Length: 161
Length: 209
Image (cartoon, rainbow over all chains, first blue to last red):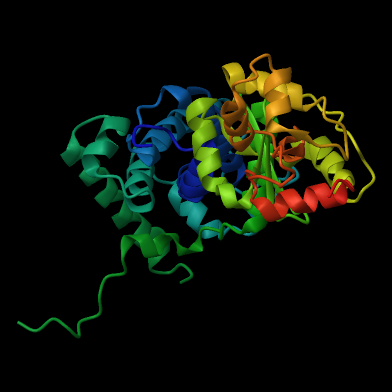
């Protein structure tokens, strides 16, 4: 049974939560569900061609990253900035968010937010992060460090523990 | 230099403790949506669920063509799913609703309310002579039994008694394709993919033992 892919259900169970946390950190309460769903649907489509033994979580985060870029662009085109929890009916999920955390995250450049999420939430190496966000390993390390430093100032210190 | 008692910088990951917890309702909502969208996109190659039965938990799995697998607990459901990922497609999701009809008919069968199954089946997991044997088994009616030798004759190869035994032992659709109705020529019950006790239970239910 060595070189076979496990049932996709196992991929969802094992990696679903981490990918959701990454989507939340990168996209916030309103768009995380959509990004997660699109990520797993794309992953399911491509799954039979995945080489057995691949780093599945990094592969999923790669797909999620592309969705995040798409959604960030789409959001930039929306008429109103969504920097507060919106008026449209919210999934109960959004109500459970710590608003300050998302305001702080949202204030980061996408590159820093992504570097922080992929390294600290998905446990990816800076080399793997760099492969997604562009630049080299050092740039990814710096983006994550800058992101964390800003978060400590804007959220970590005064924010809820 | 002793730094042990200096206050430690919070770990960067501590910053994310405020992300909402991923509880069961979140997981379920996203999973349901994935199943729905996968189905619409034609990407759900194998749907499965488990049901309880008097002979233990049964795994049911279906392709677009129909019911493709029924597995007893003793077959190890996890292994069965892994083998389907290899032999059919790894696009496998837990999608109970897709198996509602099969679950209902099997429940009715065990309740004694149903004598035959009205389900489309997919024999993809059986090949060649084994598949031929399985198609012959459907001719053995509820409450009837036939010998391995008789099935070998019905399948056009009277000498293939042992191969009939193998076909029954590897039947991917036990209960629905009634290999439990095949017994030894000397009248003893013979072996069964779900264990001899399960075979006896089915034959007793059907009034054949």
